[in-house]
Image 1 (spheres, rainbow over the protein chains, first blue to last red):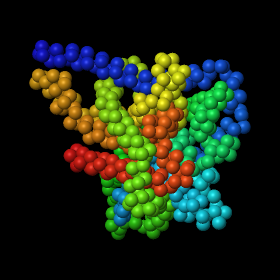
Image 2: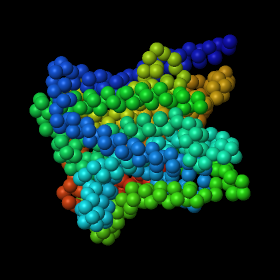
Image 3: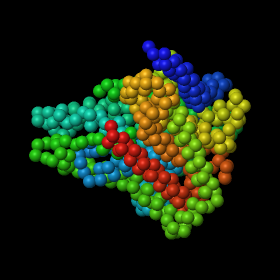
Amino acid sequence: MDARVRRARRRTTRTAWVLRLVAIGYVLGLVALPVVSVVQHTFADGLAPVWDVLTSDDFLAALRLTAVVAGIATVLNTVFGVGMGVLLVRYRFWGRRFVSAVIDLPVSISPIVVGVALILVYGTYGWFGGALEDAGVRVIFSVPGMVLATVLVSLPLVLREVVPTLEEAGVEQEQAAQSLGASAWQRFWRVTLPTIRWALAYGVALSLARSLGEFGAVRVVSGSVAGESQTLTLYVNDSYQELGADAQRQAFAAAFVLMAIAVALIVVIAALRPKEERS
Amino acid sequence: MSLVAQVDRATPSAFARGRRPGELTGGASLGLGIGVLWLSLLVLLPIAAIVSTAFEDGLAGFWDAVTDAEALSAIRFTVGAALLVTAVNAVVGTLIAWVLVRDQFPGKRVLEVVIDIPFALPTIVAGLVLITLYGPSGPFGINLVGTRAGVVLALLFVTLPFVVRSVQPVLIDADREVEQAAASLGASGFTTFRRVILPTVTPAVLSGAALSFARALGEFGSVILISANLIGQTQVSSSYILKMIESQEPVAAAAVATLLLAVAVVVLVELDVVQRRTARRG
């Protein structure tokens, strides 16, 4: 081997070490250490106080509301994602690019802007808010508004996973099913859905993670009344802002629960990813 | 990858005989109608409401709202912090992606998972997490609460994965023989990086950087606790908008929101241009 190449190799190795240390150090200091220290902080006084928080009425109410809001939002986004995915991949229509750009927009703007936008349309003094309230429907400062806000901030997550898989799968199998007399509904359940199931599961997991953790947009449209319109993220914020040892403990216990769910979802997502790439 | 770019790649084919490729059928038209109605109620109308409220008192009203001293300092600080964070991400994100693709060491898979944490972690929890370590009772004696550095730290946390995840696949696909050829021709490590690797990854770095810029510009949850929301100091645009809508000043809130919205749209369009250019070249 040429001496120069060998020297270059050795130099790269030294550089590689430096790069490796910088990368690990950066990720450790910025993400891993803080996450570990929150766990430590949460359980600093043992399990009992944490358990007290997790069985308190306000926490349970927040947990229930979070589950309801995130659940409905994820279902809506899944139905929308699969339906729109099929339309965008299988059909050509006027404004196809515009529609996909509109779907992409909400995740790139501030969640506060998302919340304010909803208030300006569906709030009491908004465009439709007055008419809706006359009809007895309250959107803002109520569950529907929180669901809309959550749907918006996770709008393209299912779609972005489903579209490439649908494109890759092509239409041959569906056509074969059709020529054998399968109805559109049968083709969807028996052919299309099984083809995209891993991509769909991945998208749903991403969407659920985002929905459970949404704070800014929900903060604007909820009103955040403890036990009533407080989701888990709002519970963390309100408790932390309250100050005092008890409130702090509440904030950390709830944050720990959210973090545990998030990490569990990442593990699920990481497990799903290779399957999706293999297919 | 953005949805627009994905849709560009999809080429609808004729499903049933006797139909033009991608022609809408009755059922599909109905579905599309419902989808577009949903999008209008959910995205288009609310955005129209923001823009129209911002200009409710005319152009002068909009101008007054965005040049208000408090608004202006929040906007300046947010844009400055977002630019700084984007620059750091472009460099460090590329470096981390490189290490994840080209380097082998024990614990690499753990590092992979840790990088995804900022995406999955609720933003308010991210804020709390940073305060525990870099707050008043932190173990290092560094207190960043109420400082601009604290805000930048929070933004770095939430935007960490963007550049890494956008550069990583490009590096995996990159042809290593070109780098080896460059080295065998006597190019130094730095020259190889500058002349061979950098041109390959630049589009990916740009799109990751654009996404992290947009995210940093609009970030709220992770910043709110560590910033302590000091007016003229650490208040970000999102906090200012929230404060205005809560104090019944919709025009002021909508004006600054419109500005953020416009920047987000510009960033997305730029991203689209970069992706289309790369797609054409590849």
